[in-house]
Image 1 (tube, helix red, strand yellow):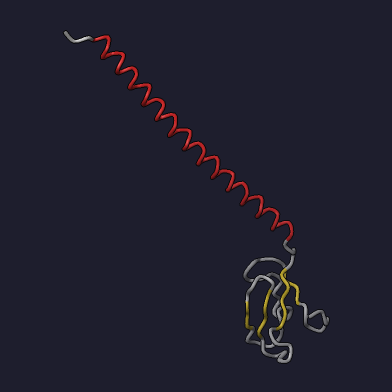
Image 2 (cartoon, rainbow, N blue to C red; image 1 turned 60 degrees about the horizontal axis):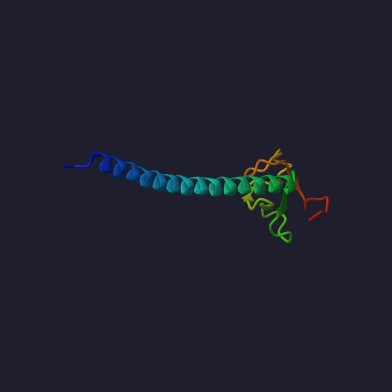
Length: 114
């Protein structure tokens, strides 16, 4: 004769095994999510710190001061720009950097800062 109680207990034990396996998988997934959230938080904090230490302006200067009429300008943010008409950014009414959007400051025209 088939012992239904034994089968029922075996099935209950099997469910416990699955429950433990599911719990382990869930805990592993939670740990992965926790690590991902910590990494994201770290990146955001780093960006916030960098943003607070970045200058509020973007300095522009002539690439080669020995050729002041070359029209080639370099910037703090890495842009290299050529103005094909005479004059610098000020003469062209350029108030903001075309790459980073910060207010631009010319550092080597007549003021001698470059």
